[in-house]
Length: 206
Image: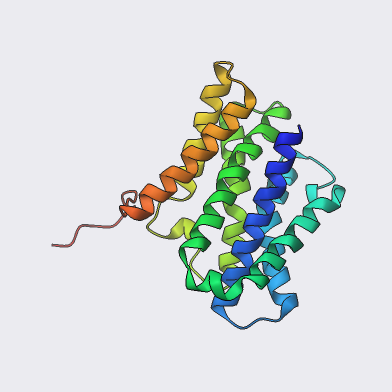
């Protein structure tokens, strides 16, 4: 339990950093604006998952450490802001680490509520991507799930891998670690080699 708990706090901080950087790159918001975007990015997906599961109170309401993890992420983004902006790939790293952790932990929590494994995989994906979707909407960006890059698909694939490993009785830490590494690795390769899924409903140009 401690292993899962600390991973969730780390994922929350990673998402908060990505939210702060996204807000600061888009405009020149004050501390409240950055904090708001970071908080929504870090807690939006998990809150949606818990609402759909009927898991109350929501995680950030029942555990103040979640809020402290958000503040820690914002503080890190502030202290190293200039260096982080000079290294745009770090935004990708923080965001990818966030979705990797939240997907696997979201699947675990859903399974604890005895939902169907397919539903658990979808809720794991929602946990990972919905905070970023809300972040992009509030930042007046096209949500990342609508762009030509593998994002939600990586989360869903990692969730299915977790379910397969769990089905065959592998130790839960190994299931979490393997699925998270798979999601991060797939995201990295997709961005590096410009992988994308076929577009829907678009005719080929003559």
